[in-house]
Amino acid sequence: MKNNIKITKTQSSRLSTVDFNNLPFGRIFSDHMFIVDYENGVWVNPRIVPFEHFPMHPGSMVLHYGQAIFEGMKASKGYDGTPFLFRPEMHAKRLNASAERMCMPTLPEDLFLEGLHALVGVDADWIPPQEGSALYLRPFMIATDEFIGVRPSDHYRFMIITCPVGPYYSKPVRLKVETEYVRAVNGGTGEAKAAGNYAGSLLPARKAQQAGFDQVMWMDGHEFRYIQEVGTMNIFFVIDGKVITPATDGAILKGITRDCVLTILRDKGYEVEERPLTIDEVLDAFEAGTLQEVFGTGTAAVIAHVAEISYKGRELILPPVADRKVAQFVFDQINGLRAGKIADSHQWIVPVNMDAMVGA
Ligand code: COI
Image 1 (tube, protein in one colour):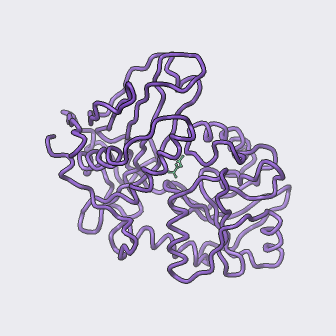
Image 2 (tube, rainbow, N blue to C red):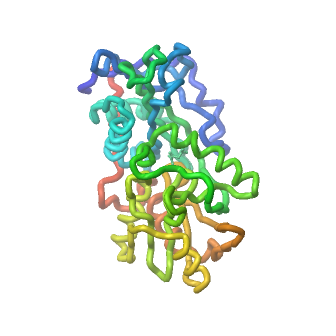
Image 3 (cartoon, rainbow, N blue to C red):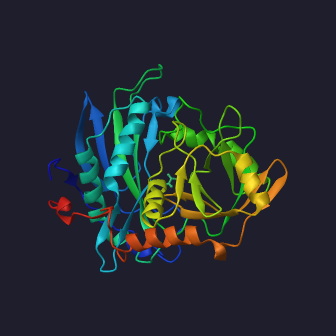
């Protein structure tokens, strides 16, 4: 291991207390976490320690100005029990793109990857064995200067924590097209996986939930016509056999599951378009009876069927899930890849390097 990660293992594992058949998303944390600190322009003291609280100065800059970014990833086990990471290099690159946008230091990719391998290696028994379940990995970076003037922090902490999880949505989601609030505009931070983007989405999401919906569908901030994302996912439409997703334009998160879905569908010969898509086009397709499927994509949710879209009092009830061939196909492919049951022609699956935890 190039980065000399120091590993201290817990003396009291909580693993035996976990019911792997009942895993609420994001509430159960594994035994260890990875930490590395940024001081004087360099990342120092990479370590894996027992999962625990850590003290913070009340003036820590992240608490005031929100310099905080994160990733969402999953580790799973193949049919033979081998622990895998899924597209870890792409997550390392996206983390660093987010860091640059938020004026934070980038993390050397090899340090990100070694930290992941070592942590997942140490906590490999926390990867749920059930197909469709996974160990959700949450890398994140925060500003830690003890200062409340407004400027970029000089000190940062990067950590990875992990949670065994089952499926994110248990049923198809009902969406309300957002016509008041916006998630992101070009030139803003929408393309970064920045914590503040999620904070800003909470009030619209709560209002949508109070009105009986699960999530909002975000529109562009200028005309409220162009579809961006839904909730915390990218969005796909199947119209007359063609698969369409909004082109990333600087305001839309470049989802890694989105990229997998595009690749899998193109490989299979589907006609796929990444382009600006208006809500009017979706309404027209619905009226014409050609709106066949709508689904969200994200690491946590993987594929989430959309049951209904509500727009200015109009309810678009979508075809039954049993008829959704495209979404079902990509879902089966991604789960099959993650379970090691489908040939990995794009080298997305990376076996966890158990040597990374030598020295434990
Ligand atoms: C993910 O899909 O991993 C996300 O980052 C969404 C999350 C906020 C639950």
